[in-house]
Length: 374
Ligand code: UT7
Image (cartoon, rainbow, N blue to C red; front, side, top):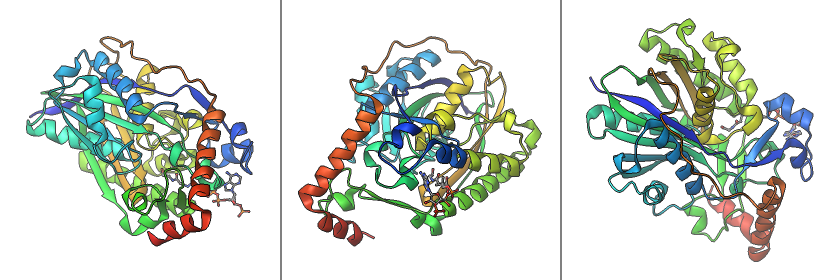
């Protein structure tokens, strides 16, 4: 039997830090509300494209696995905030990595995109179609934020991480998974203004309105991730006590606490990044995984549980058996160029662009065009 072992890992976090105090300079919000309702203290703002972040993360993951880009058969790019729709983003990573032999595909299931990408690459390796793959979870979501809506603007951040998968005869990598979608709740999270149907109506980039029913998403997320985790544990015959570390989607500290409580796993066995990075959508789980490895929280042979949910509402829970190696074989010198603006300056530039877009089309016209696409 062939498995898909995770043999390389690397992240690329943009260095500009946006604090809760920064958000309070233009939103009616405060640190106390954000920390107590979400656990978030800061998040990152990218000054480069999502593909640039992906290339750095992928180079680091390849070095960690001891592979060259030319060894890759497949690049999977998990994201909902692609720089372009056509051509796909994975091909942009392929050309910059010089991974000439690799197939390249994008996966968009919103915040679960990395994990659905992991499922896809694992399946292709297990059938024998592919031997070496890189799976990326990346989000450059802040250019699409509605910065006038405090219900959502405080929650999200940019970031990226990648893993390398390699065919293995040992039982490693994804050993069980539960995937699902609560599509009757798809209207609870919609970014109007982001996508082809809007572009075709001349809605300008950045002029988004978020339909966001936070409480409904919260309830569905806790129930969906809890049920998916219970299902995957039962299917694999694994008890909650056998899970060494939970690496969950990081949308809200209270959601994570509720899910692991339902699953019967103590918080000491949960990897948290939500305080420092907020919700990076597809990037949250791989970044948390990379940091768990960097902090020595993944032991050889460890069993990991990775529950997640996202717009759709897609959900999943993956059971991952780690291999013997928990340290990189080598490191890469790939780096982002330094930013020339602070995080708040970057956000204020996005906000100014949005006002500019509205002025060019007129706010009434823009609202009508967004409404037409309901
Ligand atoms: O990855 C998928 C993405 N989706 C999610 O992660 C959403 C999941 N939902 C959540 O995380 C939570 O529902 C939120 C964090 C979004 C909101 O927390 P909540 O405890 O459900 O608060 P709420 O929506 O019930 O709002 C409570 C109050 C409201 O004021 P009133 O009506 O009680 O006067 C809001 O207007 O808090 C107000 N509020 C804020 N106040 C200060 C909402 N956002 C803010 C803010 N700062 N940023």
